[in-house]
Image 1 (cartoon, rainbow, N blue to C red):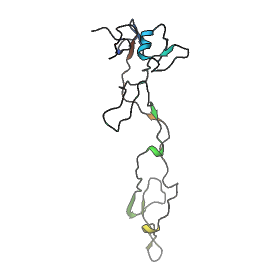
Image 2 (image 1 turned 90 degrees about the vertical axis):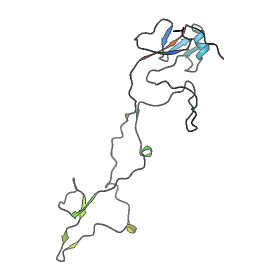
Image 3 (image 1 turned 180 degrees about the vertical axis):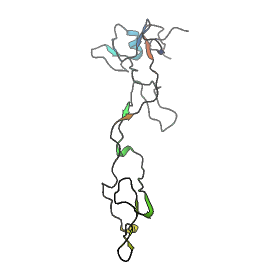
Image 4 (image 1 turned 45 degrees about the vertical axis):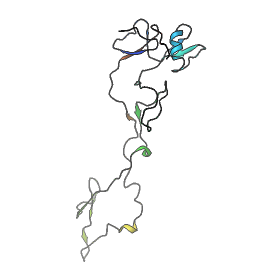
Length: 182
C-alpha cells in the first residue's frame, strides 16, 4: 500500500493511533508543530483557542459524508467541515404528518352506562313510545368536539434517531506524503 497522504483519514480497528496518525476527535493542535497538516486542513474543522492553532475533524458520534452538492437539484449543499443531525428528536404536532383520528361506533343498542373500554352505539328505546334518543346530528349542524373527547397521546419524550452502527477508530495522517494540489 502506498504511503498515506498528510490529511488522509482512515478507519482503524485498533484502540490506539499508529505512529504518524492522530485520532479524529476534534483535538486542538499547534500549526507550527504540524505545519504540513495545518496547510492541508487549516481551520476547516475549527480554529483553536490560541493563535496558530487548529482543530482536527471530530468523528466521535458523526458519520462521515462527502462534501459538496449532489447532482439532484433537491439535495442541499454540504460544505466541507459542516455538521448536522442529532441522536434523539422530539416531534412536535407541526412535524407530524397530516392524519385523522376517526371515532369508532357500533350500529347496535348500547349495553353499558360507562364509556370505559366501550364504543358509541345506538341509544336504547326509552319511554312509553319506545322511541330512541337522537345521538347524531346531520352534517350541516356540526359544532367543534370538546377538547377532552380526543386528547393528545405520547409523552413528548425524545426518541432514538440513530441508524445502526459499529464504533471504529478514525485516524488522520499528520506525517506522510504531502498531497500536491492539482
